[in-house]
Image (cartoon, rainbow, N blue to C red):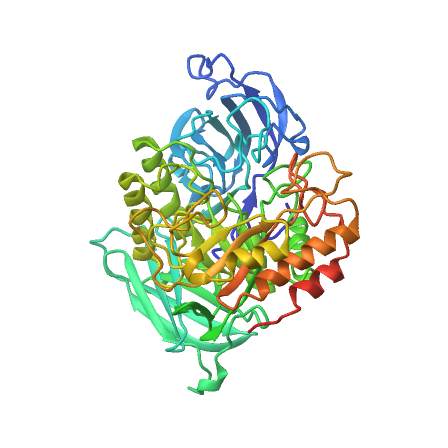
Length: 581
């Protein structure tokens, strides 16, 4: 993809993209380890990273499942004074990284990034970087919308195997900044920066400095001594201590402060990282959601992030930007990224354009000890990696009881969702956490309901009495209860987080309910169901299904190649018909 840094919120000046052509081989007989392909790579084909072999843009385009695949490319190293770090933004599912035939690291989890310091394995000049990836059909690994059968079915699509996000390298000091956790203290008009480094805890003489700028103007400078390899910096974001000068982040005004962090050993500069942050506050007051202490009505659209020729991998940064612009043109103020952790550059663009994001991970489809371990580890890494983005306002670890299919009565599955809720809250006290989205909630900051009712009148009749809907005396939409057993409504905000899904009769594939014959029939149904939801005073937002078609699922407002099926202006008019704060 283009020259935008792969992680714009944590970037150093010197970096090198490793996307592009790699040698590639299937290992259907699982003989690569025995034959030591990490020493002598077999003659195979070329693949265009970061696109997986299942996609057209990879140059291979084979959709059948292969459990083991191998990659290799030459990496030119020109500096050994600093350490070369190779970053993998996403490899599905288990990766083994070799450098010049030496195992440098192994990693499990397809939805979060990992890095490896390859300094001790390389020399100046050409070096071999080899990656083995295994990806099974095991339902105890987080899969999301990736099928585990040979053919597509329901709302599950072609699997994603191997490297599916960008790979890149940068040179860093042997002693460096590993992570920055940035928390906006909105009411205090301050920023809190918690830094972790790889400096040994017994070392002393290290300090960090941070400068905060807005629109090129210095706002504040902060400094701290490292203790046990970490540092905490806190300071004002005001100019001249004037309380009116804080620049807040919101969909209407997505202001971003620039942050520059420097690590010193006495007076020697060791490392510097560029970042940014937004001053915003997401909170809940009774049954209302507040953004920056003002009521927020969420007009979201479900976004699965699939493309025609590249599946889960965005074809370019421009494609991500185009999606965000279209979402805003349609009158939505946010997206629910469904069953996928999107490219870091998407979250950067959401920060830049003021797009609200619900962040969700791919579900498992089994409940066992392996699934619990796999999911918990990956989810906590995802929360950590996405924490700093002001656009991310809600965490969605579970969806429609996927992976916890017996949650309605099974206390072990109920306890699992509660544990994920509290673990998330341990790291992030700011954002709401939803468990589990759609129905059968246990503990949850927002109550979300999925209902694909076609007719506005029937929807209005079903939801006219809030107490009855949330009483758990009867399934609210014929199939599911709003709460699991022994849980009940505690006054939380309520959002209709999936509905709609309208498809046309002329399309091959499926949508929800009866498919409509033409655009006028589409808007009759679209308008009626939106008005029914908008007129429910106790509902504080909605999420329409969906932005684009995805393979056999053809209920998008746009085709999979991003062509509008209906008037975008009419969609926007309906979305903004009852503008709430």
